[in-house]
Image 1 (cartoon, one colour):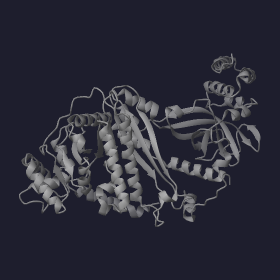
Image 2: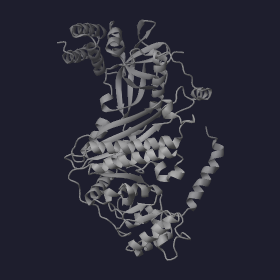
Image 3: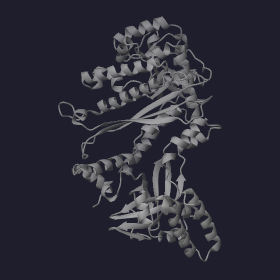
Length: 389
Length: 212
């Protein structure tokens, strides 16, 4: 329980602090927009500068070829489409429980807009309980980031498998949507920061490439959808493009999304940019370099900008990109009050493991142990927590 | 102290309905999230527990709660057909189920009426298996509770009798429903109009379970 007497002054201070922050349109916004337009066509020069700076450790966005200030209009409605979305959640092993186990629950949903048919939903469950799955060779329980990476890669693999199962569908190539980054976060951070054994990192990379290969082979589109993105990779590129270079970064806490909310009309997407994550070069060698664009899924006067992450083979095929762009817009229109792809909302709902479900799973395990005459006790700490509720 | 597992017979086949969220001596309410396919029917027999006592009841009320997603979709002028079907067919929506307590089982005995204590809060609730329903409805004392309950309509009464009849082997269904009709005639002797309506519903129930 919280001691509200202690918490209340912090709440008041937090609200006061929020009031002092610059609004959604800080003074630097006009400067950023001006630079975006001035540098819009300077693609080769910006690419050269970015690649050079990258070698010195610079991180930002690299233009992929479209003018920086491009506003790509919403494509025409799709006569047929099949959209598949996946999301995952997990139960982490509890070392205080009667037996440790790790569960990943991937929720998948597939819809054929315009068919009038109910979407198909299904689950993929991973259930680890063996020592070799849950513990390292040193006898330590696997770290949370390692388990999270397993959830992320399972999500991508299942989505790619679902797309592959629909590769020759008369409704056309599938559009696959994942929530958030396409890559496991541990991979995106790069090997030195992933805090994973080198062998595990390589395994995740191989599995990622395998899933991306499978998705590419369907002829469809694949994307990671990031709502309310907090990145400033394009702003860092703009700073780099100034005559004075990247030093003395001028944009403070301005975010890319604020710039593109001002630039893009509803339905429009931005130019494509490449990520400068270290892993992206390795992915590029396999033909899966990750790119992104911003998309305004809001309404006139109420922009709502998302970042969409795609492998380069989606960008290289105008038809794949067009289908993805339109499908995302249509999905977001379904929940227009809070624009977000409907199928990702539902995939999240399918994946989520509720507290009552966790409780029921615990009961099932205890029943099964009792039936087999196995008595495993929870730790004293867990027992006390159960008593306290 | 007994555990959930050893209180519940035939747990492999009984379907989980939800957990008790409110309980009185005569009825209890169950909260759950269920898809359309898993929502139990009016008149279905369910079981829960209080200590060593298994409490048997019948579903008399079902409330489907729209959540925030339902409301956002409903705000659309014309939600896509696929989304409407998804909302109806696929989603685990919050469901509140009202259960009228009919009796209880303790130490191999079947008792009709209210148990000494209502079920414990958060106690799991499961459907009854046909064998359990047959044993519980061998004597027709449970019908009085249904007839006298203000919460349950006569539609629930008929549905419960249909469910109980369906739990019997086909040759015994007709006999069970005829005996039920006789019991109703005795209980509702002072209410001829209501009796006629209930018997009409019972006749429909006989047709439904192939007892005509």
